[in-house]
Length: 368
Image 1 (spheres, rainbow, N blue to C red):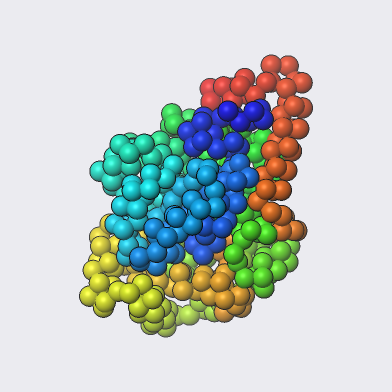
Image 2: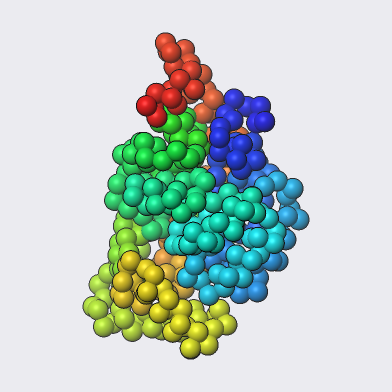
């Protein structure tokens, strides 16, 4: 279907031309970016977790108005409008749904029955196996180089482990930004790549210009580091004043700051105090992270919004994969995906000149 030599089980499942996925980043993966990705032949995910209650139908409609291609929606079960998002996904019959925290097997079954691909992101082999048991049809594997919440195992080690452990299409994420990475992922045995930071740094991105400039000036991958100070879970951010301030806070001060962010975030979502408490208790009951992470969780959306939307590169947070340090310009999604595919085809053509190394042979060997 693709006609470009890079058709894979992923492109057939998602209906896209190229095996390149734009991940759902809060306040970044808006209708414009998703549509631009899809129109360029990739597959974009709309970030529903940062869409206020009552807004998901309009956001999906905006994507549909800008593209006639397939796209997906990302959400998690601990956002206040999770049920609203689930019903919208089913109503609009989007091509795929991605998630990290939840949903349960029954909800995944509803998606599958509606013909919607279920595509969770995992950072450990055991989570990949469990996701498939619950009904996932595609797995995105993010190595430790990736942005936002991330693990400690690099993609080069995690990806082959997951490929050996599951029998569904696997998408490689964490550290990918060009065609060499796509060719390498296909050679490993993956069916495509997913990128977040690379799409954040495009001319189609809604991120504030001052923040984009700060990302482009990072320069050193070591300055994009992992911290647990924000919500108790390991996350990768560009080092800045706010991250260091949070890391220097003692427990009580951090707890009080989290409560302030909780109230601000809850009011912005139109929640009552009782509703905030119920959501926190539900998250605490279901989340392995425990009490500290549940209490601290509202730090993340408020401070990330401040960094990405308001352009406050010192007082907000800047989630990022380490690849930001290797990116020097803002291409359009169309130019970016075209270049990635061209570079990947060039690298794969070199491999085909090696004895027994056509792409299918390479993939089969990687899975053996």
